[in-house]
Image (cartoon, rainbow, N blue to C red):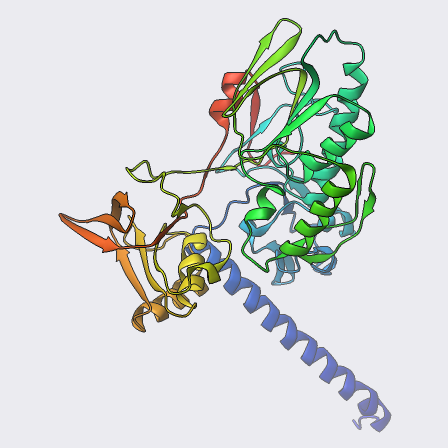
Length: 436
């Protein structure tokens, strides 16, 4: 039976297009699968905040969720189905769920194997302790836009109640704890509503963003700040965003108090007594706009209070020509060692108590291995820090003690959840195991 030549004219190009599409889909699937497997091997499988769960039976494989995600790398298609391939990088944008045409995506906290503690909040962000509010990352929302909106809404609720509460000399309407996106929005809202308030932060302006490495690109979405109006960014560098917020501070007269950590919040009659590392306050209400891991995890060794000890890498160039010890075995530690070792004249060592970097991505493990082989980084697995001195660090390696000449120490041991503080304050939380 002869084949119509006209059919071949149309069929062959279509077949070629189909074959190319299949090949491309297979390549993308293989790449996504490799990323997912890399994260599984590194133990990086548990999202820290709100994240998507995809129902395969409902997923069409249309990739609308992947295109909608501002991060562009969190989701991937494997065998024609959307999969969360970068769990620990997800910050809960939620755009994927909105874009899905079949409602195959549900946004949840925690997982079946790892619960996430989320404070119980009212729709106005009030905790189980009347008068204490939470906005931003501590409440489970790490996205800048969400944190700003929660700060705005929380201060609106506080303002409605403040006018009906008894005050007194020296009693603030509200004490705002934290000066990240939620704290900035709340503070501007307090100015706008003419509330008496103070804003304190245990660190510096900008919250978690201030401690990102230099030049890091921050993802955000349009959000509305009280007094200022809409801030519209997409991809923006850390420096640009901080400069914007500093301009907001100058424009509005906002005067946060930095390097002031809140240590206790107790009710005293109709107000709260708040104790910090520098002062004490009385306020009708308290807004906690702090991070979930805002306090670095210390090593607890002598000399850790020295000025040369820091808990995150901000600017690698400050270590040019220095002898640097990095402590930790996760991605942040490996990335710090790598970036410092790439600076001219540095002498870098990395100390980790384990025998392998089980919770670090393959690309970081491989890059560090190359630097070790090149002699640019000294690897000290199975070691711990015993003491930090002004020009040295005393290391314990198995049964041996070694004195390591040193100018700077970068400790990347993670952060401490403020559970003890919340419990002492009386705030109740709920553990989410893959639920909304």
